Length: 261
Image (cartoon, rainbow, N blue to C red; front, side):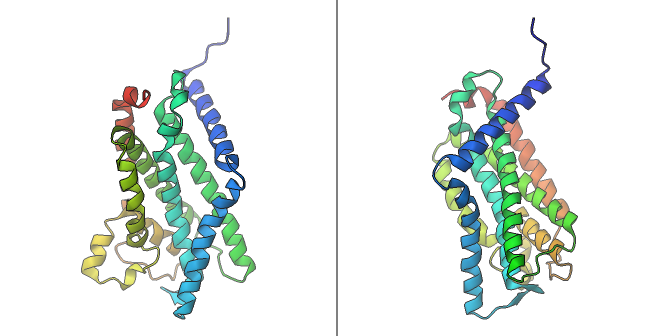
């Protein structure tokens, strides 16, 4: 008789297999697919650096404009890539649900883990490139930066868990979510410094947990950064955990419907 495997061992084996499968698909599904992972944020950074250079803006909130832009984009991409890839995980792996060991939630968790890992690598590569051209990209508080990035990843995970269920139940929601990313890009302080927004309106914008994550990343790199007084890393994590638990609850409730077309 074969050796009995516990539920935890089976789950870990499923996650490992899905992670490797998603890695191969993400990096080698098309020619130079791995290159696009790096080029997408790089193109955004270079374009915005050029845009801010045209208006002769060299410093934002006490940080070099180029570094300010790069950090904001990388922080937002940590959320966006995790969330959007997680949203499509269930639909892309429908055939795997014929195996009883594989649950829909496993595919979302595996994709989110992969995207977080890839974004860490992309961030390191871009920071190394920035350092080679003379920019100061050594974080003053590395732990605070990691804390902020992890919080943004958790927000993306919660977003992916929720939208993967919502899109399965109402396919048209996928298009709406795609449109939502553009206003979030601006409302999260990626391009517009939050400290220049008047107080009554800034308080409303800071209801967005992504704005807290973006600000926290910049503050972790430069302690003299002019962060907004409303910044709260606790708010980022509370929002993220609420999203994750709500998403997991949806997956438990709709598990049978998600596993069937």
